[in-house]
Length: 320
Image 1 (tube, rainbow, N blue to C red):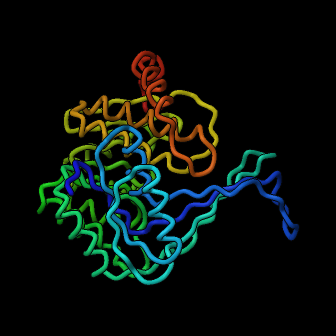
Image 2: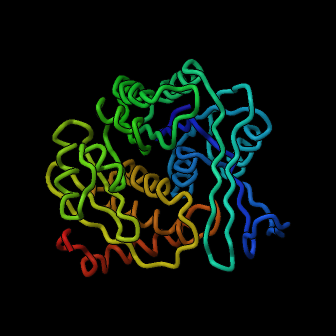
């Protein structure tokens, strides 16, 4: 099997979501129907690329009943998968919406411990897929060193794949030291990479350009939340504004943004179009409740707004 885009999810999850009128301690709470979704960073990216019509394969370790259900859910969505069977039970995450306040509570359980050999089995599968793009997203599970994504970055170079990483902390820093193609940090993550405690808005472009010049990556798209994103290449920078929408949930928004960008690159879009599509996908994902990702028709509607009206809402001065 070959794929233009392969995703790697080393810490997958069975995502469950429901809602309740109000969270009250020590009371029996009557919840709404339980929704099941296949989750984990790279898996979400694969699901989103599939919705956009892209060719992808999701690679991940899976164990127990939860792992089997996760694979079945992906099959129903038409997502191509290659899984490594491991002992134990794939983790669960729970998202609860308090309908009276529209506040969302997210409970993330510990990941299934896997060995480095089992993770390397995932890389062996990816090598056979010969992808043009390799996307790793999400945290590292127990059992793997914080430097494992650095190993993945070197692996991607060896097989000739453009490596896109979306993670945080020491795992992000170690991989960036090896060098990769595209990074999507938020302000806090960019601060760590730039070696500063905090960044003001008027310092973001210089910090992103700094890590490009240091060889950490070729392209940076800084996530600015409801303000959109900042695209930075060695040639300059541009703010991509996000349309104002009614936010229902932020679950999967970052993964949707990554998926939109990688899909766009694989379609031969420019870096500007890539960032615009990424912002449209990320924004569209916030419009749905629970762990559901974007609806494709909303992506194209929001993209049309960004391309037609974005100049009016672009941040001219990052210090304001």
